[in-house]
Length: 194
Image (tube, rainbow, N blue to C red; front, side):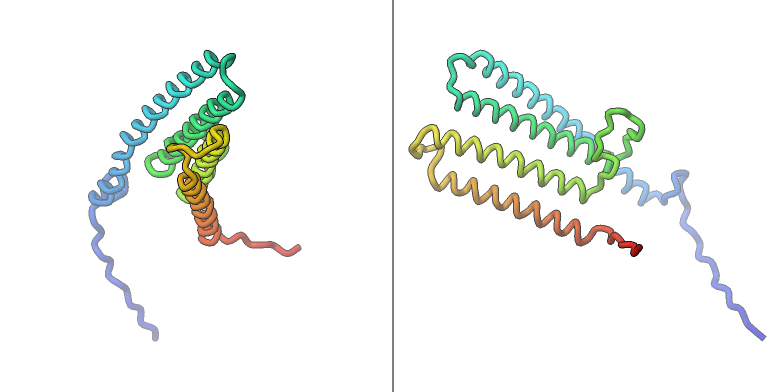
């Protein structure tokens, strides 16, 4: 003879039409508070477009009177603006897609390749790499400007250049650390034996 015991069912909390209880639904809806932040970044990107056009106009106007080093510095400044703009696009599109709502770009011909597999970890690594690129451009500009002057000035002291190199090295180490942690905490890939 067997006896079966049944567990009484606990009463379920009332659910809203979306399937969540009111408090979790409210907390989940709070993600929409980030939308003004992303819109603000779009305004910042517009400011960078204006800065880029201003620098480009300066380059065109002064191209005949400028030295090769001066032109190189202006071009590096343009590259710097483009890299910062790329960083803004990654944060705006990737952040919105990851933390706010899906953009449903799956079949759109202009969907960025990286967006199909973006998550918080991938976004952190991409941002770290973009920051290293931006830091590299700033460091290169410092080296060129300091070399053109030949002697340390108030703008480019040896200590100032040394600190820029140290900060850049810390960015590189931080990015390597983020990538290593991401790799360690990521999904384990199984190897199938043939």
